[in-house]
Image 1: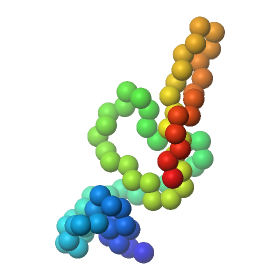
Image 2: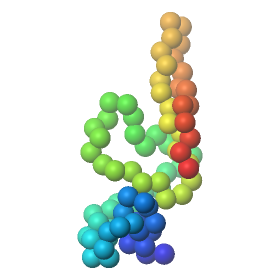
Image 3: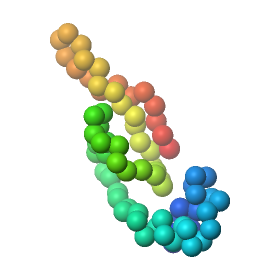
Image 4: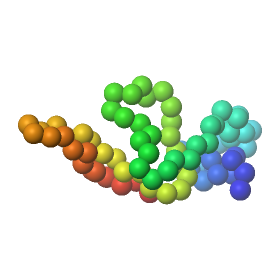
Length: 78
């Protein structure tokens, strides 16, 4: 499936014309991540839109305690 066709499957872009989808596709950088990779951290600049084409992403927060800190999963996005 072409990138334009895949973008069209996202509700956010489903109403766009093919020419607009093609312009959008030209600016897309596709990335793959391994399990456990951190793709964005609290405090990072929010300067990109991330679209999940397949797999799942764990949304985690860092909970700081008096003795130790831990990452806690608050949601899974599929």
